[in-house]
Length: 497
Image 1 (spheres, rainbow, N blue to C red):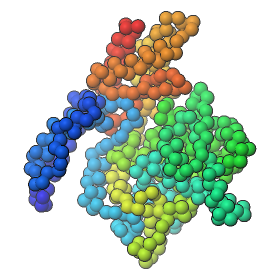
Image 2: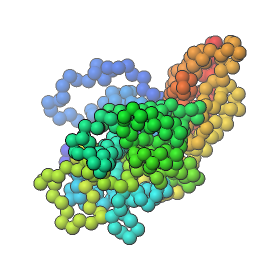
Image 3: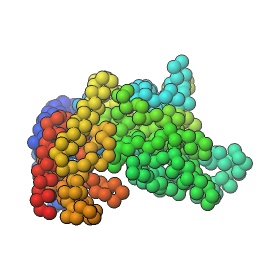
Image 4: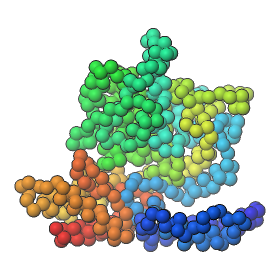
């Protein structure tokens, strides 16, 4: 394919992408193919000779499209959104054009410096403290800074490695030899709540530390008192606390942990304090949500996924650290084939030392496109409209009379269930299993309808339904539709009892 052919086919692909987005509401959001469907209709080997572009394009429609679950559909309400946008796609196209492997500054100075710039832009946009900025007001290098990771899971691993490095350095500062400090690694323990995303446990598995999962109360929040009690227990057993994760917007209910209290405990115990705001962090572009996040200014690291609710195509997970020293010490590897910049300034950052892989894509481009083409006002409008739609749905479910809300609606997530009194035959002794089954059926019937896609979760053994509003291309019409489907499915469930 030469440049002329690429120009022709590229225009066709852009048209196909635009057509796809314009027709999304007419396509069932959930794929219904059976496992192995593609193996049965694909050749056993790659083609020996080139095939026409038209044949490949046709296979996209007939073979690939049936196996796609359409995350960008306005009728996709299952998991937290994976926002796409036309500006984000354009930025990704330029990133693919350059196709750099940006492990240090000299690989492509613009890639490094743009990332430093846009991460400071984004940090200021969500109201982060100055200690997280890569460049200080006077233009000199800050101790902290932001870096784009692939996912919040990667960010979790990276900061836990930094936390381990910090803990080892503290042991050595207290008089332990290198060998003695290393031998104590197996005693390191990280703290999570029972509502923390599974990324926390996965990070602990990678790092090789112990974990302590702390039970939450009825509000599903990790509290200062619970963390203090867990730490005291572990210290009495000879373990070494080194890391805690507080969450701003949990996956199950968007609960917000006691971030100020956690910060106080972390500071007193000299442990790394990470705030995971993978979904809800995007809401902080709106000043009215910032009072909910008091405490993050004291954290060692903060992360949210711009690819979830901030119009930036996957993958773009924004991570900030208040002090990059331990991160760089833990992940920095020097080789003679990594030439340093001749003039080291605050903009010369080797982001390979801020992540797990060596190579990295030019992901800052798509974030730059989104922030410039939407502007702060456009991003705020995007967030506020989804919050408005979620609160509207909450009101309609309550007005229906058959549903109860299971958690406060703060962002774009509505968590609810059918009222147990409508399901139970004996309202004096309600059978939890029967109520759970009815709500499981509610989700199943809603998805069988084919027009929307939702999922259930469990809250302390209670099945609840989640409707996550946040599609870049969704409108009030889509929320009207999911409400209608839920009402029809509820009628069916209750009639069959």
